[in-house]
Structures are given as structure tokens and as C-alpha cells.
Length: 111
Image 1 (cartoon, rainbow, N blue to C red):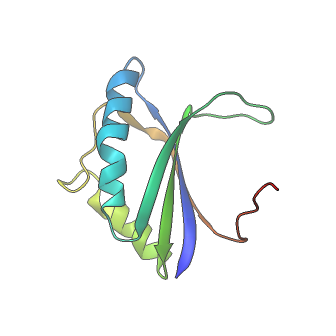
Image 2 (image 1 turned 45 degrees about the vertical axis):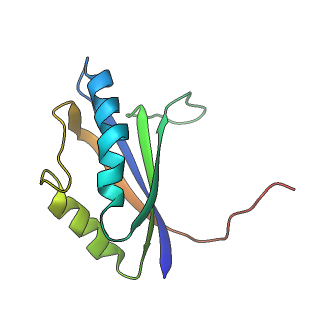
């Protein structure tokens, strides 16, 4: 099976950080991981920018294992705003970016 990382850069609507973070961490990660192909998820918040620019403060990284990555992503979007994956009104979809990267190398571990 092929392995991927899906990166989702996102933002809440202004003033809705608490509701957004509660929903994303407490509900949304589990909902996405309940869909076929998703095996794990973790969230991050921006600490600093050393080079370039960023538009989003929040990042979720999902582990995906599948031989049909396009279907996994299509299925995720098909489930958006359904009982399987309800969206919260604190989530601002406009600045959101979703990218799927296929694993190129094994993980290098510090010696």
C-alpha cells in the first residue's frame, strides 16, 4: 500500500479560535480518521516563520495509506458537512489549503 501525508492549512473565523480548536481537536480529527484510507492525524499551531510567508496559523497532518489516493480525497470531500463529518461554523473554509504528498523516502532518524 502506498503511504501519504495530507496537509491541511486552515483558519477559524475571527474571534472563533476557541470553538474552532475545540471542534477540530475534539471531533474533526476523529471524523476524518474514521474515513477509509486515513490512519492517523495530528494538529499543529504556527510558532514562527523563518523563510517565506504563511497564510494560516493552523496545520493538521493526516497519515493516509491507500492504492487509490484520489478516491480517498474525493471521499473525504464527499463526506464534508454530512453526519459522518459535520463542519463547525467557526471553520473558515476560504483560506484553507489541502495538499496530499506521497512518501518519497523512509524516515531518517537522528543517530
